[in-house]
Image (tube, rainbow, N blue to C red; front, side):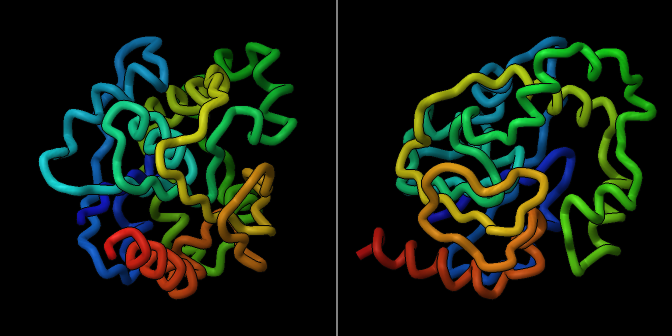
Length: 212
C-alpha cells in the first residue's frame, strides 16, 4: 500500500521526511487554486493526482488533513491518517469561528499575510525552528491567503473515510478537540517533525493491523 501525503498551508514534503514508515510516502504537491474555489472543489481536482488502481491510503497534516479528509469521501481509501488537524469544522478553535464572522482576512493583502516568525514559532512550539522558518519563507502568500479563507468557509460534519486521527495535547494552533485515536503527550502543531519517531511507530502499527 502507498500513502499519498498532504502537507500544511503552503508547506511541502519536508514535513514528512522525518517519518520512518513501512510503506512508501508519495507527497502530493499543491496545485494553483482557482478564484474563490472551495476546499471541496479544490480537493476534487487534487484527487486526480492519486492512482486508485492499487490499495492506497491518505495522510494529511494541518490544512493537508482537511484536504485528505475531503478526498477520502471521493476515493474511499483503506486508511485516512489525520495529524494535527480537524476532521470536522466544529473541531476548529473558537477564535476561528470569531474570525469567520468578520471580513478581516479579505482586507489583508497577500504580501503581508504571513505572521511574524516569533508568532509562528510560538503557535507551532517546535524544536526545529530552522526548518519551520524555511517552510514559512518558501510558502506562497497567495496560496496561504486562499487556504486560510477556505478554512474559514469550511463546513463539514462528516468523518473522513477510515479515519485514524493523531493529535498533540499541546497544540496551540488547533487545540485538541473531539475524538482522537492517539493523543501525543506534549505534542505541538509541528509534532510530525519533532516527535516523528513516536508518530511513525503508531502509524506502522496501524498499517500492520489493516494489512493482515
